Length: 473
Image (cartoon, rainbow, N blue to C red; front, side, top):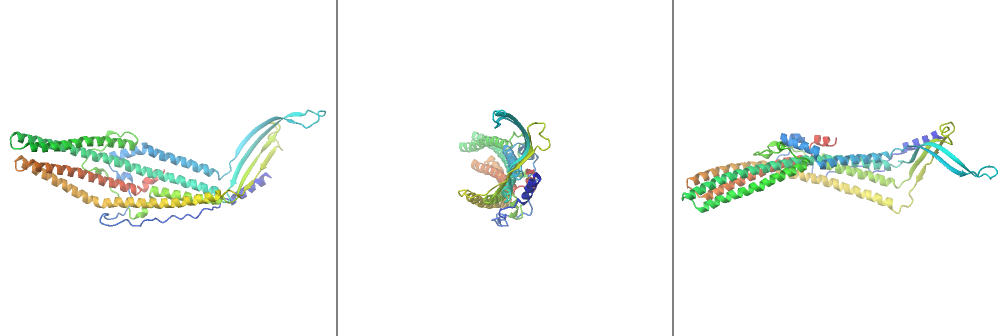
């Protein structure tokens, strides 16, 4: 009889596993295949994004990024969420198989014998020993409810993996951006300090000419304004550099060693490689946040199957097999075996609309996730298009700014020489000096824009396939 019951369970189990989920179709990307074209965009690329080590080539910056990948708290949270989601998936998957428990018990009690007083005692003590292997309420998944819930949990787990990959790519970009900002502000500080020295020399010259009777107090006061302006900039930018380091320490998750901080350089983008632009927008389908949105959509699709299955009967099996005896010695003796098998079937007749509401909710959630998936692609397309538009004009901006600095430097040299001979007034020197100072500051800012554009392209194109696969390991 026991073998017959087990065979019945096995045969019914083979029938389970059908699915009521809708057939999944990936929504068509709601963006053009080609990137925008025009004067702002330049020539489109023909490659895929590079590994972050190829993009961020400065050895100090690489060390800082590696330190951040090991210490950043947000990344640790993302990793912990993967572990939590994996555990939830394993819990849900366990429902597909029956659970088995082993129990042993001894029962002692005093019970009425039912005998008249003349034939024996009215009560007697009894002891029963038992040992059983049992399964409780194992649901046969005839309509795929459990399989759908398991698939939904699996897709949620995959989504957290992509969220972790997205967090890592964002972290790399954030650390690089903070490091480059620190480098740019250090360059601005150097320019301001040099301007203070130059302006102070011109102020000293104006004072000597005033003492010689060949200059006016106006020249001295004008020269003083440049010194004070540059001195204020030195104080202000010194604060900015300190704040830049604080921001970098926070992003890294640990103090950054002094030898890993950026040095003073004429070009903050010098320690970066280039980002070869993607051929078309289909690369966005590999971006971690887009893939994460698609996994959420697949999970919602699976939940529709589970909601549909709730309208159909569910079959649960409960049973046990073991031994029972009035003595321990006889517990495993022949003839002491016991078993029970209690299948049950439940058919929803009246649920006050709960099943229909659950199905409506699952379908609505599916529509929400479709819209979120499409919005993720549209947002990614806009971010890449903006970065490409900036990339298409940055080379010309840099050329113009370098030419402006060279011209302004030459103009200042001429003005200072002519002022020393008394051929021009100090106002000409002041104008040339301010022009050069502003041009130097603008050049540093444009260089930072170029560096930030490389970082942005790395991020919005979704890193590289190498970065995404290493993040999910």
